[in-house]
Structures are given as C-alpha cells and as structure tokens.
Image 1 (spheres, one colour):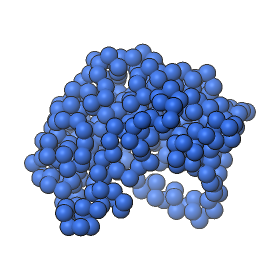
Image 2: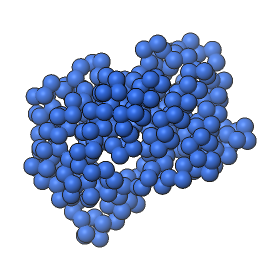
Image 3: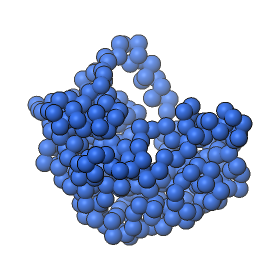
Image 4: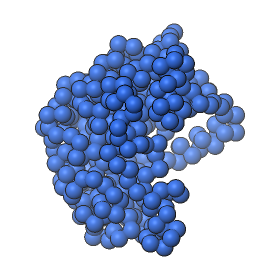
Length: 323
C-alpha cells in the first residue's frame, strides 16, 4: 500500500499515423461516438476502477493522458475528463496531471483552458527541428511549431513543459541533431525526453528499411547522438535521471513515469491500456469499439491478465533499476 498509485488514460486517436509508430493508435474519427463518447467510456472505466479500489487508502498521485493525440478531444473534453476523475477517485492535492499534445493541435487559448482545468504538465511531441527529418518521420507539424507551443504553454501558466525528441532518423546529420537540441532548449522546457529511433516491424518505416528504401539507424551513430544529447542538456542545466530523460530538477521529473520505473502501481483506462495492482497485471481490449462496447454493456473491458512469478518480478526490478 505504500507504493504510489497512478492513473493512465489512453486516447488512441491521431489525425494521421506516423510511419515509425507502432502504438495502439487509429486515424481520427474519434470512435463511433466522437470525443464526448470516448470521454464517457473512459469515465465508465474509472467508475469500475473506483469500485475496485474502494477501501484502498492511497490517493492517486499522478494522472497521465496519453495517446495517440489526446488534444484531438479538445481542451473542454479533456477538462471534463479530469473533472470526472476527481469526482470518482481521491486525487492528491499536489497530484501531477499530464497530457500529451502535438504542436499543431494546441494554442495559448486551449492550453490556458487546460491549465485552468487542473492540468499541471504538458508533454509536446517535437521530434526534430529539421524539416526533412520531420518529413521522414511523417510528422504533420512544421519546424518551429513545437517551440512555439512550448512557449505558449509557459504563457498559459504551465510550470512544467516537456519536449519529446527522436534521434537517428534516416537522413539526419549530426548538425541536424545539434540544431534540434539548441531549438528545444531555446523554448525553455524544464524537461526533455530524447529517444533513439527504433525501427518496428509492421510500420511503414519498417517496410522501407526491409525493402532497402531507407537505412536502419547505425548503433554507433545512435551512441554518438546520445552522448551529444547528454552533454548539451547537462550544460544547459538539465540533469539526467532516467535513460532517455533529463529534467531541470527533482520537481521537474515526470513523477508518473517514475512510478513505472520504481515499482509503483497504476490503473490504465482506455483501449489496450495495461494495469498493475496487488501483484496482478491485466490489459484491455485493443479495439476502441470492443473496449467501449464492453463498458457500455456494464462489463469489464479486460482482455487478459497474469500474475508474474518471483523470477519475473526480480528480472523486472533489475531492468527498471538499470534504467
């Protein structure tokens, strides 16, 4: 019971699917019932969570709305979602409440509505400052948009603004990456996540690499990018605290992700979301329609579960501790 308790809310919809992405995502239409219907289904699953957690003395310490592109729901629906969470579960007074966002989907007005509605942190998908790299990744936003969104978040009152970056994209040079780091830092985030590009099977990028139309990332190049990232971010005052994450200080770390890495527990709501409580792990139906239908019929959307044995738990503790 001493372990932190988090809540993850999955919004699987995107305006388009990037060529490298293998997440459980779907091109918008936002499900059969639109943004409001998706929020209603999430709240129905949170009702289930509230019944299951009845008697647990812990408060929810972190909420993370991820995707997909949560801001496709619109700021008003995201605020309604958070209000519904507060009505159903005990949130800590100083709870960290994060939403992911794409640069082209937010402006100062929508960010101000999110901030006033209780969100404390925004994580913006920047990926790169180089136009040709963004094109290779099939991102919809243009160079400079992420920096403008980060500044708009600051103006809207967010103290915690994170930028997500990807290095090692085919066609990216060392200079491209150096300029990306400079551009990201110029926007004044207090947190940066930088990930090595992974070519996943079943993605358009994976097909292009398999067919010889694109080069797989070179491990030595990735190692060099990582070292350059750590040097640049450390010099700018962001301290490394997890393999792909740097923060301006302890208060700027992602507490929600820290919960994953340090053996916390969480309830994951939404299509394909995973949960772990009391030594039991379960995962939801991946299909938004199947997930919503189960909840609409008053059934759990669970698709499967497991109880890891001691060997599996020990191996996981080592893996997460190394991160």
